[in-house]
Image (cartoon, rainbow, N blue to C red; front, side):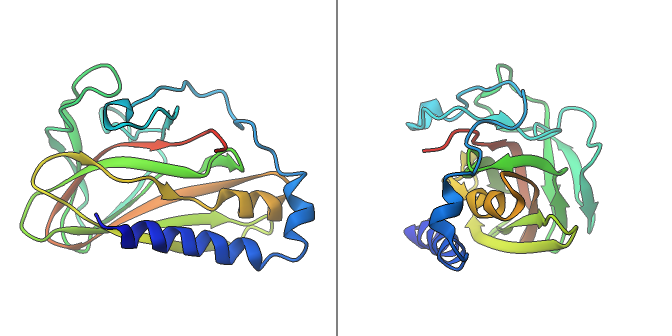
Length: 202
C-alpha cells in the first residue's frame, strides 16, 4: 500500500471534523474510553504497532459469522494468516471473488476507536479491495463512507491502520455510535482474515 491511502483516510477524517458546527466544543464531551468490555491484544506488535486492539465479532473466520452480511459468493475457505496473532494459527479465512462483499456486524465505537486493521492476500493477480465504513446515525440513517482501496500481495500481510472517523460520529451521537466495516473485491479474488478495531485514543 502507498502513502496515498493514509492521505485519503486522513483527509476524509479532517473534512468530516471541520464540517461539524462547534466541533471544538463537542470534543470535550466525546467519550474516549472503550465502549464495551471486549478483550484487548496487540496483534500487530511484530510490525511495530504496540496499540491494543479488539477482534471484530467473527473477524477470525474460525466460527460463526452471525451478524455478517455476505454477497456475491463471498465464502469461507481453508487457510488463513500464518502469524497466529490471536494465539493460534487459524484454519480459515474469507474469500472475496471480484464483485463480492462482506460486511461485519455493527460494533460500538466512540472517540476511543479511531482505527482498524486486518490481514489480506490476493488469490489471483491484481486483486484489490475497497474498504468502507458504514455508520448508523442517531436517527437510524445508514451512511457509507469509503476509506481506501487496498492492493494485496501474494503473501499474507497486515494493512496499514485505516481511520473510522469515530470521533466525528461520536460527537454527532452524544458519545458513542455503531459502525460496520464493508470489504468489496474490486479486481481479482482476495482473502481477508483477523479484522481488528483499535480501542485507544491516540
